Length: 187
Image (tube, rainbow, N blue to C red):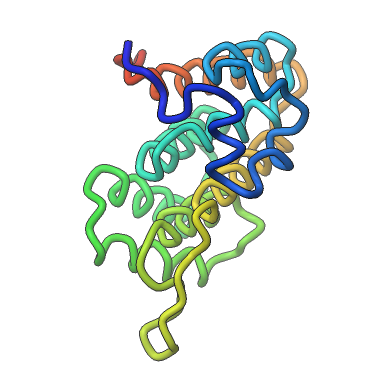
């Protein structure tokens, strides 16, 4: 098992200005891989999603967000399916043209859809977040993470109450394995 990018919760909070607010109350001295499983155990889904998204590098966070959303539902319209595909393709091969394609689609489709936010997460991973005809503007360091969080919060809101715990536990176990860089179980 490899060490996570942020060994302690404090390391995470120091790296991202919004992480403490997004993750919520935590003893900053805790190990990040002690804290995250505790959140899962307590079924604190929103803080667990936030913590996991922050712990993962951008490409892995987007890939995890896409896998998680596909666990949450399989009902996507054509735009949503294309947004997920673009985000997944960028996560697999993070080339600039894939990033801008995901960004363009994420800005164009209905942003009440979780998949739109995953396309935006890929699009906000680097480079300019503005269309080419506008001045260059960089994303904030946590913009990708916050978009992944929002996508999964939208997906979580639509889960059937009796299915939430099982699906979220599966999603977060996958995320924890990604943080640890362990092989993932099939979907």
